[in-house]
Length: 270
Length: 233
Image (cartoon, rainbow over all chains, first blue to last red; front, side, top):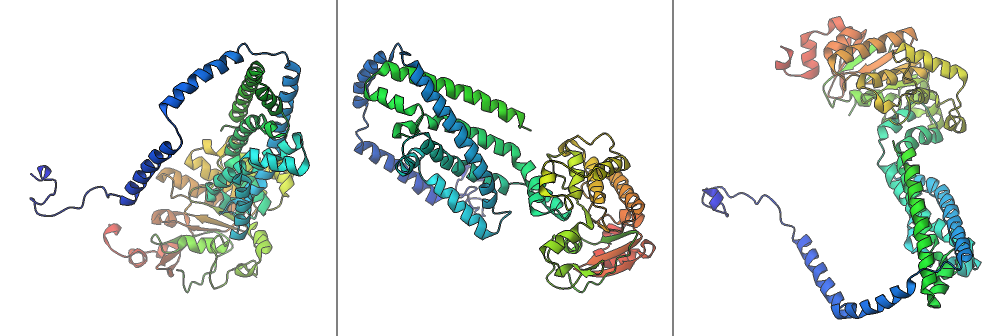
């Protein structure tokens, strides 16, 4: 009886509906949808534009093929430099992110320390690596050094934040036991904290290394060393076959690095 | 939460604290090594007031106080040997601890203790591969590794089945006796307390309401500690 009576008024007691309706959430979704429509209308994002663009893309792609590896020495040199930037930036970033992430963990540090460390990390994350790279190029001049420093900043921001979060999720029971034995602070970190977060830390670090390899190919565009510079020049000269060769080289390197970092993660997986 | 408690723990034997959940048994034990900070009162250990120690003195005092936990609190991803050597961390520099460079005597002792708790051959196994009973054996060995002058045990058998509980209490009592360490243990299993303790302290509502040998723990006294009737039949 009451099942056929949605208001429930027929069978006496009025029950509250089983699921609360959240009008704030509904209003939020509606607002988002309205904004998407508005943004589309202002940005000339139309089907016609897309179809016109396709013809252009066809010409562009045709000029890319076949790729030209004539400048293979320059490509090799650029890739080598990019990879070096990525490796050095990852090493530096990891070395800095480890203590910084530890200081930022709210469950181990007093509020003053953790908020300061969090502020530094947030600052590192505030800008895209390319913008940071521009700043460093202006500050210390063209070359790989600026690229390395830009990616160190990016690495510290990323690994530091995730590492701090990983530490905040550890089991404090294990830490408590180490502490109860009379271990000093550094020993508590080494035995109670790090074993719990090591695999995740390795995961973040290898992920950031992958990311640094990709970013190191890009910082060259703003003059911070690596393969980016020849890529940018080739684009500007409309040497699309050279562009294609460089892109293939980047794909190959990124792919190899992914395989390597997957291997590294497996070693530390458990 | 705890109030008006005045106890003196004998330098040998097993003293058990019993009482209903939430009465402060755990808090009492944890106040001793200050995993919980007491708000007032004093705790005398080896002639010093533990509540007045600064951070460094507290660390040194904690080396003298071993602790066994309800949920074992082993470092899960470390090996059994590494967990045992955690008991020596108060004596080893961070650098040496990081490189796993312990005095040979510590290693010797760890192997001997592993045999003693029945886990010979488990040294390189990881803690998270052990069963509950095995973990608590490691927990006990880790505490004894400290060569403590007092062993605290916070509900050491509450996560274990009845048979394993008896085995663990057996081990705890015998190992402590062999090494001459007094044990202060809190537990909610009255029968286990009766069986293994030399002295039982009954707590209720944050206060001590019984203190005496197991033989004096009559049904009337239990009623006083836990309240109610039905559960006694």
